[in-house]
Image 1 (tube, rainbow, N blue to C red):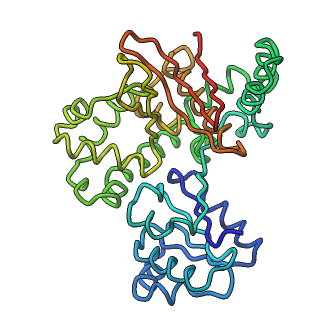
Image 2 (image 1 turned 180 degrees about the horizontal axis):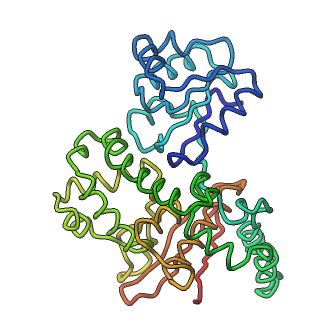
Length: 347
């Protein structure tokens, strides 16, 4: 029913594979801005390029920013369902010019990395869904909820979780059995991120060297799930705080990290957001993390699991956290309408 649908997410998460199948199913046309000749044609006359009789799928749409204004014009003058299917390695809504062009005209979906259940091709856990149901049904006891989460994960072993931590949920990394190939793939991933992708978000970030970028990524990995000072991040990369803030924002636009905002309920409450990595394998490569014996690792694995479950919720759910200066903490506070679910892990 929507005139345009946007699929965004981490680079190499599987967006192109997904939209190729959908486009073929709907007898649409697929164009990719990774091809220079296609990109040049779109830049020369974006409105003409976007005018098609059926569905037009554009892969890596962010590479031609002018295309969003053309899509806005076409939808505005001749709105109908299933006109555009767009993919991008950026979070569209965090780019102001894109947001203004597509507000009210596009339905956005983030394609997340696989979680442990999806890698094993078993049904994703309904835990959060059942917890929200329990919020309306006080008769459901804690013991019943415990059985729900244990039952839904009974086919996932400790070995499965250890592999998930080391490989993550991006298809090429989690399904490659050769560790040396996977290590090289991770190295190339971050080199491309730092040498190309950051400058695509903000040209001033091109001044950051790969060495500086890796040092800041390592610092960010150490602060996984915690609040980080921009000045600390800047010091680790020997750059100005203003540039470090742009670096953080760009990583969020590129879907590598997500800022989780605190609930400010007391004078001693934390005011700064914390940052969560989207893929545990990328985090593990940068941080040289351990397996599930590490508390930070286990909390990140849970965060990635909860994020996957939230994607299947039929209603909008907001993720916050609560923390005070005396270290009282609730890492997962999920709010939907008048329902609030608070979860902590006792390790």
